[in-house]
Length: 408
Ligand SMILES: *Cc1c(COP(=O)(O)O)cnc(C)c1O
Image (cartoon, rainbow, N blue to C red; front, side, top):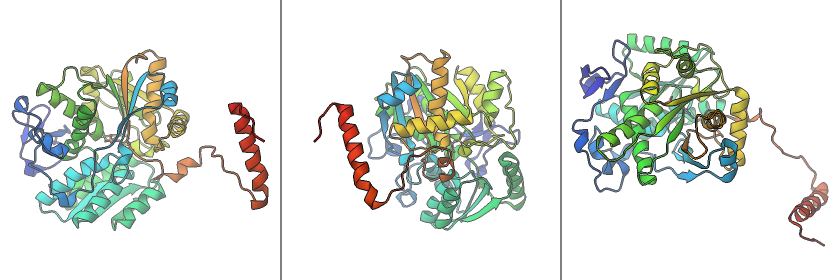
């Protein structure tokens, strides 16, 4: 059964994403207090008491999830000024972003409803993920993207055979509204980044973190936020674990947005009850450029009720964080790098203590946006084969000098 947060019930077949009053629809798990972790090979088997489906058709999975949760290297801990910093590397998913977890549940739902067409509005990663899963499930996929979506993401959708519409606009929030209204008129179901079944897929990440930390959850989890599905799903998972008596305190979420497109964080700072839409809110972190997310008010409300943190990062801070992560071994896209920049600022402001346990969600890979790389100074030297020997000698000599060894 689906319900709104205020309790209005909807049958699953309704399968919309929002109620007429704009409230998010949510899957209601009956008897959650009695839910237990079962034996099973897959996460969804072990947590089946917490899920609204009996299982997944293995045919539609691309092997998502089971991503590494690793302690951050010393260089990154120093960058953020946090002692206990860990990383959840969601770039290890089949299409290199966390979106795959929710696409699995979306496609499962589409299949259950006998649909043969799957459609989404996306800045890139959702479209890419849906295109891949749709290809495996034998469904036709339709993706609407704004003109600033990186060419790499568009090519990735296209090679899976998706039908792509690159809508000539820089106003993603406005375009999304227009496409959704058109689709509604035509009877086309368009999934967004924040639907009830997508959220159930993201919820599994919370269970995975619970298992990987053996229940010793972080104090804070930094989540780059746009359509709000990811942060909502993660938190729903922890709330359900708490209701089942499996965890004590809930981790606090950190809502992270780009300064240029921060409808939730700006409202949070001004203590508003409703988000402040950002139209044409372009940022180098294009994967989090949702300027007017339906469902944003719910996240704002949760941020107040559960004493979450919220922070923005400027364009320069995003690029610096992307470089810091890469210099620590993690090549993520700009949106995925925002968490480390936000945590750094929150530590400097004293909102996070150096002793707090912090987890960064690395939401997507760096290689799907080559344009952003041009904004970094990347050290590549052009050289002739003849000049190579002398250069090599110099580098080896200098390295030896640094380590105090004598060469020659
Ligand atoms: C989609 C996406 C986000 C934002 O997630 P939402 O569920 O839309 O809030 C963050 N980072 C990356 C890389 C994404 O693709």
